[in-house]
Image 1 (cartoon, rainbow, N blue to C red):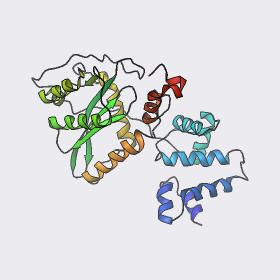
Image 2 (image 1 turned 135 degrees about the vertical axis):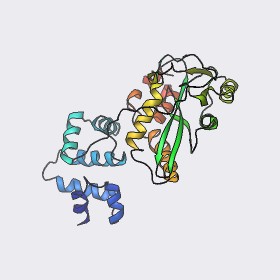
Image 3 (image 1 turned 45 degrees about the vertical axis):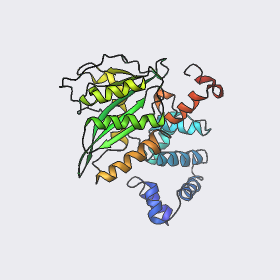
Image 4 (image 1 turned 90 degrees about the vertical axis):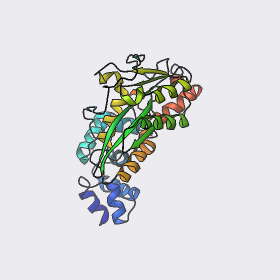
Length: 297
């Protein structure tokens, strides 16, 4: 039977992939699995099916903490220990964020350096709006790509990004333009980056000035001053860009899908009380609908 075969191979292949190949629905598989387990454990059967489904929907990225919060958001009353037990029985694991080592900063230049205005004020409830930005490598079998991202500190949304074969000044300018298409920064918004030459260029500094933004840069050799951007890259390279992409086109497609299809709208963020960045931003815009957000608005 197809469902039984999928169950036997679940630790080797994604459930969604096998369902597509065998031309069966994932919902049908989960319903079958719940029926199969019902005689053994009536209490755990619905939970088991829900855990498997949420884990699969996260592309097997979520561990027990995020799974627990995702299930609670669905109205289930559940504790992490029980989720962990069921995950262990099902052979499910989340991905663990590795240590990210930045390697793209070129601070050996004669361009102007801005002071560190942000001063590691990374809390989402900070009164001063701030955007953070950085650049990283993305590996493909056709060569390297360079990814610049811009993140809103208060919501952790990736507001804009730019992906290119080269790392010219235009890379960060494109990311800034894309971010401004999504959100107009309030006057006085801090823009924090490292000391890379792209961020210190006249064109970029002029663009920030035209937007009424305040430039801020990390201290020399101190990546922790830009921890929010570094944390995003660590997450990206743990959950999505784990191996070199076959082609540069594949990388463009996968990173766009990760940011717009998962990270911003779906992924539960610990700094946001286990809400997704988009949901947190929505609640910030409508604090009257959520009393817990009134202090953050």
